[in-house]
Structure formats: structure tokens, C-alpha cells
Image (cartoon, rainbow, N blue to C red; front, side):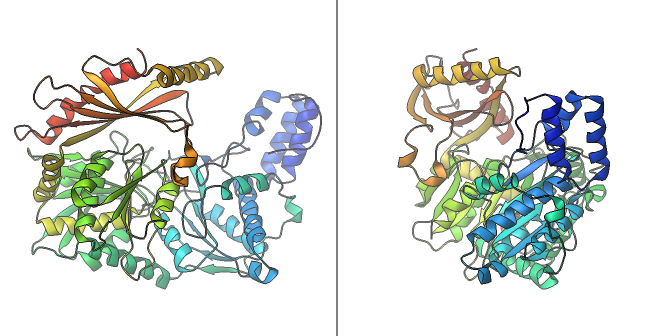
Length: 588
């Protein structure tokens, strides 16, 4: 938080100014007392820990550990960001009358402080004269994204930390299109956070707070069913079993309702100890379906009940992980790129658009481009994140499907429906269930994926990184490595050659706004054939991490499909080439 005063940074006078400023805006009396005690004892180190490293308003909002101080999620932080959002929305209104009609949709997940933070948010916005549609219970994030559009609201807020560790929470913001915010929203709100008046100067009440109704929820499910039906209209006769877990999140009742409406012939086999919302996450402290071990319970249930597929939503139900049965009978998770390819093929088969548009990120698999070329479709690439993906989708009237490799999927709404302009794990689960019922079995669904690889070639997507020690020296070293790649390229073995190079720090004005400037390098490679079914092409992308002192490498390898080997075996064979490329790009 910016504070007035000219005292020397780090001095007690400096901290007096900061603590005075913070205390007038801190609702926790116990924390104010702690700050005063630290001032009295001259504990500058502890003061710095509490107030010296504030959370930054970043990707669509705030996210961090729950606790006291400017570097944590707490009631003071929620009050600041909510007041700033309300002021930002009022500044966009063209008249006082219009300002009085502004509406914000507010939802929350099942984490321990989420309901309280959402109530604070609603009361602050109501005190500013805005109408608030507030959920009574934990809800999926896609519901809020949908209701912003359906209710013609000016913004949406979800108090959620999604799949972050159990001690975190967050504040996600949607704009008036129901899309995660970008500039000038994020920069404007961040600036206004520094201008919040004292707590005494704030009005806080619930006069304009309304409840998200059952009818609103049913409208969301209706459009979801319409979208899923439009994607996969025909089903086989039969019965199927699907293992499912919401990872202690909010998804279970919604998936049950959706499957009951659309797929009564599918029996859901739940991971019982993870089925109910529980923000303490007793069985999985890091509830990210991409993390090793997180889906172990799901896979056991799938095996015990002889299920066709296994599905997992993350805790706020905007992502979906899918596990298919291997040829040998066991289950394995397929990558976000592989599932994106399956979904894209289904959408292209069902669309009537003459030149349908698919959207994905620059770091996702080039398999999508190969599929689009075969199907007469167009691929738009964006920077990472659905705040960019959905902006590209909104600009494409013939948009049919979008995804990112981190298990996020967005389907174009059915004709006449409002739809969700964000990733939606509930819609993805319903579409996948219909794809299973249309294929006839889990094995047939896997065959569809393998058939795509037989047609297009096998694509494997892998990640690698180079972690450096913290401090200024590692940052300089990271910059030097990127500069070396820009000037001289990677130290490739003789059988690899570069066919295309692009630096996304350059020529941003020639690209669409959703593929703007970023510290990202892309290299397309080909490889001379040295044996059957070895990698023949690669796409490698390099960028610095935004949160840690490390360089990240995205490696997409392509080879011919081998009918004599299983899918997992072929991917494992491709993965053996990743280490060599990592060494080549990081000059190791």
C-alpha cells in the first residue's frame, strides 16, 4: 500500500507512517494491536514481513495465503480491492442514473474464509450504490462467468483460490463481457486500491444485495446441456460407469445434476471422501489435478467399479482432468493437449460453420494446427490464459472451441444461448460423458484419440525448466541465457535444424491484441530421420517464470504413429528426447 510521509525507508518514523495508514483501513483490531506492539518494540523485521511485500493485483485479480498483512488475503485486502472495483465501475458509468443501476455478480468457493470475504465484497459494493447478485452457498466459477453475461452485469467476482494449496484464497474479477479482466481494468483497479479512504469513511450495508436464485442456476445448466448436445447430438444405447471426484470442491452436485439431465444412462461412481465441499482439503493439501498423486483415489475407484473413464474437476470446477483406460486395463491421465484435440475434433464434426475457428495458446500443442488443416478450420493462437483466449473467441463469429494445455476448455454456446466465456469444467465433463456414450465404451473413446494420432502423427507435449538461485544474480543470468538464445540460438545436435524462429518481444503491433508482447521465444525444429518412429519435428518455447527465478521450456515433439506400440509407450519414447533439448536450449 502506498503511504504518505517522507521518512527514510526502513526507519521507525517510516514504519510509524505505514502502520498509521494501515491501521485506519484494517478491520482486525487484534492485528492493529500487533502492529502497535511491534512499533513499540522496534521490531522492524517483523513489520516488514507483515507490510513490506504487498500482494500485487495480477492475473484477473489477487491470490495468496490467508493471513494478516499486506502480503496475504484478508478482510482488509478484500475491502480495498472491492472498493477499488466499485469506484472503477462507477467511473465508467456515463451518468449518475446509470451508476445506480450497475450490477456485480459475486460468488465464492468452499474455502474457510470465502463466504465471509464474499459477504464483505457484497456489502462494500452495496454501500457504493451497486446492485449485487450474491450466491448463498459455494458455487462453480463458471456459473459466475455465465451470470455476468446472462444478467447483463457490469462485472463479476469469485472469491476462490481455485486449485492453489489449502491455505490460500483469492479474488477473481470478470469484466462486463464475462471475461477475465485485462488492462485498463487491472491497472485501473490496482491504482485505485492505493486511494481507498479510511474504514470510517466507508458505507457498508446489504440494501442492494440480492440472491442468486435457483432459476439462475437452472438457466446455467440449460445452456450447458444445449451446448453439450450441440457438440455430441447422437448417443449409443447402453450403460456406462464414470468415476468422478471434485477434489473436495463445489463440482459434485452440479455434475450429478447435469448428468441426470443429459446422461441418465451413465452411473457416476464418486470418490466418497472427496465428494462434499471442504476447503480444508483433508485428503489433498494441493488440490491440483495436474499434481502427481492427486488423482490416486480417483483411479482406485475407477478400477474397483470397472469404470469406462475417470473425471476430476478442480475445486472451483473450471478445469477438467480425464483418465482413460489403457490397452492393458489400467487407467492413465491424458494431457490437456490430448483432451483438447479430442474435444476439437468433436466440435469440428458437429459444426455447420464453413471455416470454423479454434483458439488455443501459443504454448499449447501444434497438433491442433494439424487437425485444423485436415478439417478446413482456422486456429488462432493467444498469450497464455483465458483472459486472452476468450477475447480471441469473441472476435471470431465462427468460433467453435478453445482450450489451453492446463486442463481448461471453452465451448461455443449453442445457438440462442448466452454461454460461458471462460473455461468450464462442468460443461467439459458433460461433453466428455456424451462422447463416451456416443463412442460406446471407454476403449472406443481411446481409439478415437489414437485414430487422430494415426491420421495426424503422434504429438507429445512435455515441460522442463532451469531453476536458479534467488537474488539479483540469477535474474541477470536468466537474462543472459535468453539473450544468448536470441542472438545465437540453442546448441542443437547435428540432426536437428531450425525451420522457424519468433521472438514475441518484437513486432507486437503486427499481431492481434490477444497475442501481444511477451518475453517468449519460439523455435520450430525438424530432425533428419535416423530411425523408425523417432521424433521428426519439434516446437520449443522458452520463457521466464513470472513468479520464480527459473526458465520454463515447453517441448512439443511429433513422430509417426507406431501401430506396434501402445500409446503410453510411444509417449515415453518421445520423452527421452526432452532432456537433450533442455540441455541444448539452456546451454548445459
